[in-house]
Image (cartoon, rainbow, N blue to C red; front, side, top):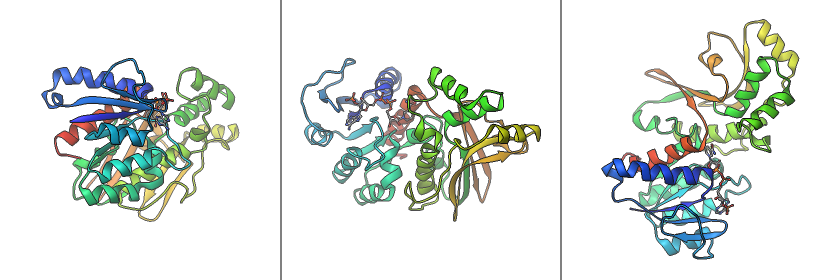
Length: 314
Ligand SMILES: NC(=O)c1ccc[n+]([C@@H]2O[C@H](COP(=O)([O-])OP(=O)(O)OC[C@H]3O[C@@H](n4cnc5c(N)ncnc54)[C@H](OP(=O)(O)O)[C@@H]3O)[C@@H](O)[C@H]2O)c1
């Protein structure tokens, strides 16, 4: 099985390293090889740690040139139109090439269109790394067959949860953001985290997959944490409660907004950069919690998709 990696930044490098570590130990990966890596700079043929350009081609041309069995998209999200990933997926899937992605943008913008193409030809899409990184959220549903999910509810953005935790502990908004950046929990421009967009993108992907809906980011209202006042934090605290940014979807509603939670709520206890997801189906209520980010976690999300693909479980 030939892999073409798209993107070779933090996650791409972590994926390559993890892939080789696991390949040495797990026979299922024996016949898998990385045959190329493509970035904005061009295509490197073969599998070397240090990226060099062998051919100055676009992502689409790299797929045609390398003819992989699987593309693994670990490139930066482009929320304007999802490109070049959307076109890359369409090209790959329509040729029976499977897609594994940690890049949220294409699926948050064009989930149904992408899946329609895949289903026509029987190609598979793995996307565990798009929601909660390597903590099984998407893939948990793959081992929950024939249940009807009526509600999902979660804390899906670690940056905002970290900031809210620190506000609760007495820091000002600016202090909390500064600290989050220093610790590597917030990007230089954290706008898409703070305004709820990132959580909304993840909720869009999960809702489409789990509830078989056809939602796009932008179809519903989302609110982040920027308008929360220190007075609101103080009031929640004095009542023994906490404010959390909650992503929520049921069969009628989908929204991201700050909510005041009491200690009876399991999500009340999710602090710092941790993420959590509560799933209600007609049989049971399940709660998972774990890291929602980090290059190694995202790389593991993609690698777990690869193994599930090899096992015929995607
Ligand atoms: N880091 C995390 O904790 C984490 C967790 C879950 C998911 N993710 C997702 O994983 C992806 C990668 O994150 P990262 O932290 O590895 O980012 P990164 O270090 O900035 O690396 C991004 C890579 O994508 C490539 N790229 C960007 N635009 C491209 C384009 N138009 N065509 C081809 N290649 C392109 C870049 O190539 P150049 O070098 O040529 O610019 C670079 O190699 C993102 O979608 C992110 O949202 C990250």
